[in-house]
Image (cartoon, rainbow, N blue to C red):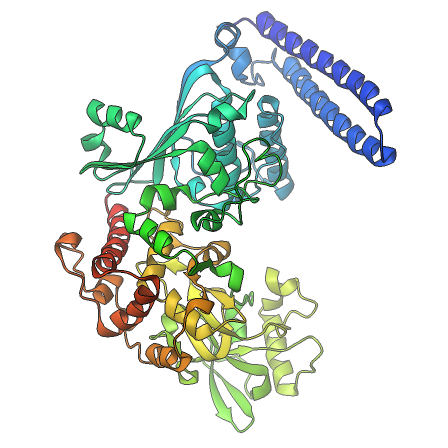
Length: 634
């Protein structure tokens, strides 16, 4: 064990080096600013701010070291500092040869100081700031991390900082950072400064019985922050195993995977090698808005020099594209060039209507039944003690859809809507009966709910337009896009789609089996229970048919949608004519007649052969089956 005097000596040495760094920065500041030309005021302000910020960060680090130095002699307060407690490792070798870990899965809102009671929001924010500052000690160019980052993202950066320049890094963590927005910071760092040796997933079995998340194994080389061009020329390998790790991980397979330069498929695994430079380009804003434009071939062809000097990395769907993607996906991209567009480029996607208190704003509720009486609706109490004789004018109530469970078919008629939504704006004057209802809501303290409390008048919801097209965003086996030809108000259990294009055309494509393929590739599958979740921006990133290439009479399309009698409670297997209990590819897909009629329109426009159509049905059923079976594997 290293003595206290040696540890103090190590800290003093670090402080001396940091003081010299401050002197160097101050000298550079004095030399550079007087020699600046052009718009002097702007340039001086910009550079002074840059130097001052760097000096401030170094001084903050010195302050932290001084604090550690004061505490280090107190056994009950002695902190653990890697490069001090392992001074012989970092002094002689520059770090560890290998770092292996399985960090805890902690969502961003749960990240908090350990061993502290009564934690406030300010405590959590300060703790996150300290985590970021610690990362900046090793990688000062990292200015910020996405505030939604879970705790494993911080562990990745800290773990990589412990390696020597020839070290190897291996973590087993949730797979979420491969696909979600907050993973972009880690992805960009890895692509620019590390060698991504391999990322392993397993479609057959979850790693941990008691952890309700799906995991991957990440294997990286040590970071080299001196030159990003070296890392960009490396090849990352994404491996999906088809059976339990105990059955497929062996010397023969690992050697074959390590040497794979093209896509390799065996009965045990699939490996997808791709240059790190390509991965960075696909997620770079200058190339397009994320993954989709790059896939469609809309590269701008920047020369390598300075290619990534401007713009920003927006992230990439590594799990969806390189882990889960079947071969037919790339056929769709190839045949769909010029026919497919990003949904967010032709429509606005946003979360459904949030009331903040559904039991008050949606009628009938658990408290009341409702009865039509002329131009009024009467609220009939279900329980004793509730006010009677409350009446609401029909102008304040609008038909709405609260849950996907309340609808059977994709084409929604007014008679299908069973809930009324109380819609008032802040300038309207409630009637006496409505005032009684509002007063009752205040007695129940509904007005103190966070969303309600934030409004000028807690009951004022009006102002948002009705919507014609929306989808469920929590998916078991089948994601549905509901078309309401008169429009309605969808709750926040849905994602709404607003467009100036044809809603009918969009409804046909979005409800096709091709869209189900995209959803199962790019939705979030990190939930151990098998549920797939797709957020607002991910719906916007889905590919869809460009309405301008669809030359079919809209009346024909609407009739097809109206006649789509497949019920929402029928599984994707039933719709495709596949039995999931026997090998999927030993069956010939036999889709239901209305499913086939809808899909054939899309297949015909893209130009698919019969074999390719079968491949889409098989691939969707396999993706769903693998996800649900994996959830049941422990």
